[in-house]
Image 1 (cartoon, rainbow, N blue to C red):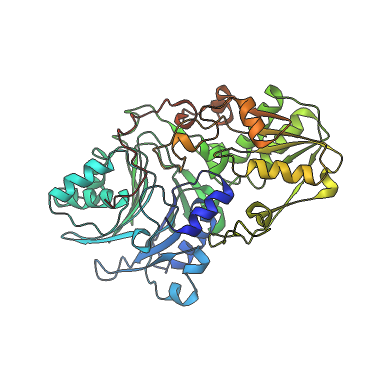
Image 2 (cartoon, one colour; image 1 turned 30 degrees about the horizontal axis):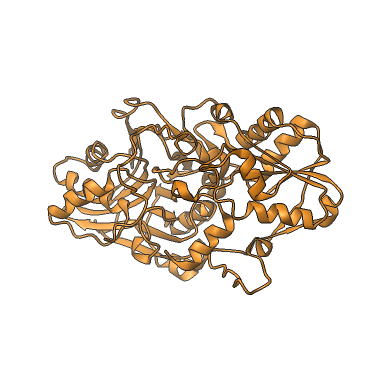
Length: 480
């Protein structure tokens, strides 16, 4: 793994989301690269490692795809000149955070494949649990892989099925019967834009419309950014095909299995201004805070959130408890993926570079600090210590998710159990490690309530996975 990335994850001590996907088909023939750029900009929180755009002209030569991808943030990889060189009215884009496959340019998406039936550009969010078996099967069939990501396995299977299918969407449907796990896909063929979602609906995908153009995106915030109206969510198991005739839907794989939406989209991953499967992310976080106040009350003078995702839950706690809501942390918004960790011999703390405490907000006060999760615990103890140094009389930590006890195999970067602070520790033991006066987590029974009563996946908290987990850890790299 890129050392800077490891450092950034350690500083955040947060689970990472695999990716964000975006696609658009403009029926009027306008170039859409710039629109994809802004869509990806809105989805940057879903992946800061690499990004890419692939476009094609539906009226031009079949199979000609202009693409550009690279390591870094959207505004680092693309400039005005690069965008002007991407000509086409149909295209897909991607931002990536790796949970399977190395952090290299080769693994950046979209993947562009040239094969007997033409071209295919694919962007994928999620993780397959049967990728090693499918990859081995393809390799023995003579496949040569250019990447170490499971997304290439999906692309190969679609291309292989396309040779035997009348249409590209039929090929996608056949491939979906072989792949297992979490996937939201946006796929571009020369004359079609397709979106597909796994039957459990782990990862989000929605449809939007702007004038005479249709859009597919991981979150509604991307639709808002480009001025598109929300049409609807892609159903779990559904394949949507966008052509000049409009949208076609294939729901043959829908409702064959119980859906299991990733609850961490609502706790942490998604932007608060997004609405996923009919549920407001902001409202979910507000409710999580309210539930914490009901179930883990404590006397205090001020409630504060660890920015950004702890803020809405902190407001919910304040509203429910009547304890004033305040701002205790100033965040440096310029600490990006290339943040260089200070050496051990240096006085600068990684956390202090990113966050600073407002002394006048907390001095002499009993503080309730709300964060969305504790993974390894590497930053929670430092933040508690910073509040005490700034004069807080008491620091009570409340967490708007249950304790992480199990790894995730569906596109969330939750590490192995041994690295989780909650593994083999009681809540009291965790409290002692982080140095808080009290500690309370969101109760598991509250998760479905906060997610608008959607059927959810709670595997990382309970070990009860909606699909049988793989026998081997598939979250590493295919680089043996």
